[in-house]
Image (cartoon, rainbow, N blue to C red; front, side):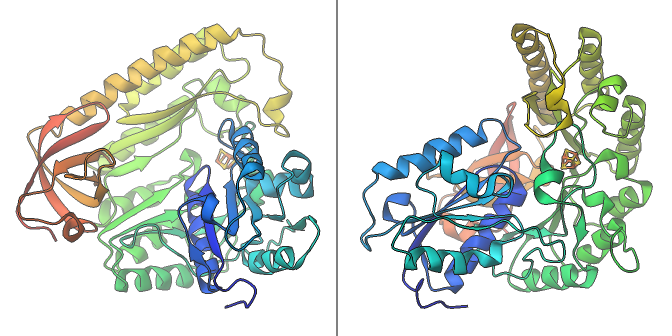
Length: 454
Ligand code: SF4
């Protein structure tokens, strides 16, 4: 993999957006490491500045244009030339047109072209003019799956199981920029997980735009439930997965979750709205009643399950009655947390063509009412663990206080606790520690460590 042009070059990767992008960034870093490059913390020091972009999250375009354009006024790195590469969903969507918005851009690589990045960078370093080098070809047979990965945390790994999405929710750009669903071969995923566990990974998160429909395009049609059980048998301590579309989460998956000890009692299950009318307009393929029925089956099968969700407020045409249905669904589903968003148009999606006269203040008012309810429920959900012991996978020291360790419980709550006397933080990071919880706030738990780490 080493490339003479790139050996010794420094690089910095900046990531916007979802877990799939975080994982793609880890693979870009792994690829550049394998080419003999060295990671640095800032763009100032970097010969190669990589942006992994997202067109799902709000303002992502503006943030990218701002940050990438700012590189113009930045001093050149010690080697004399900085190459700016843009990957991810915006790169796939805009291709060479990015040069118009971002004059500093030298390389554009699409979501199927991660493995082409070293060759594109070499061409850019070789070129004496400011040409742009682009590869956004969609190759349904290839999704650069076997690339080296530079994991941000040695004890945690993202494992993609599929790419793309077939669902075409009317507000979402993903199927247009990441293409149709393509699953990775079952055995390849399981052996990658086995390797990771042997390398010391304690927590694996299986990734896909809709993991519940895994396997439909593959020979023998392996099911997601079978994959959960097989990965559970690798000996991994914790197994998570995201994203789950409720329409494809069936009783087989619920049984596999309940019967696989490594699967954590936490599920993120995006509902988006509590109104069946709006869910239909979103093309979500389930009703309010079907979602609540699914939630009931999940709570029955998995004791202590923490359920979190995503909700969009102000989808075009949403009325006060629709919104009240969202509030009542949030109460009925007893979410432990929710990411709430005000609807914003994604050019190129069907919903972007709908004209909605609802005033912005009305939508903001709804958003505030929902946020208050979600906060109240998160606080209540955390009170359940006050006075109990939770097992925490320790991830780092706190940014504000190096004497405090931070990690996540099995239910995905953020947990803080002071470094016990006589212990070094590095000896505990990446280990499971039991924490006796003596404080439960809306966004976190805190307490003291008890017993020995494992
Ligand atoms: S399931 Fe819907 S929201 Fe999720 S990626 Fe696919 S189209 Fe987008």
